Structure formats: C-alpha cells, structure tokens
Length: 86
Ligand SMILES: [Zn+2]
Image (cartoon, rainbow, N blue to C red; front, side, top):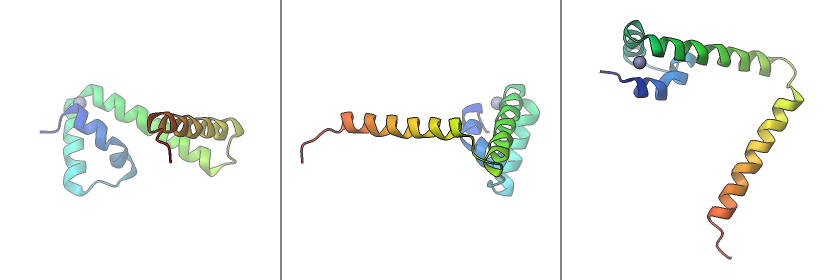
C-alpha cells in the first residue's frame, strides 16, 4: 500500500510520466482515496507546468539569479562542512 510520503517521493516522476504502468496505477489509486495527495499533485503539476512554460520562453533574469544564489549557497555550505586542508 502506497503511503503519502511514498507518493511524495515519486510524485514528480508521476507527473513527468516516468513511472511504469504499475507504479502510476498505484499512484492513481492512492489519489482516488487521498484528498491531500490530490491537492499535492495538483499543486506540483501546476508549478511544473509553470516551470516548463518558463524554460520554453525567455529565461527570466531574476529566476536565473535565484539559481545562481542557490548554487553558491550549496557550494559554500559544502566548503565549510568539509574544510580539510590539502
Ligand atoms: Zn496521500
């Protein structure tokens, strides 16, 4: 039986159509019973559509800057965490 947290893990694959037939059937059955996950998938699908529309058109400068900041942040975190001398 698929749990909500299991569904959350594969939700993006489900939306992208990357699950096999049995997996997507399991997701659909869960969605029939679980209102929370229906809302979750709906929101995810909406934002996923937004993203693909976004990347299809000209990339927004602020959007790219946000990604740059995320990357820089991640690199900084990694740098401080594993700061071993060469
Ligand atoms: Zn659920």
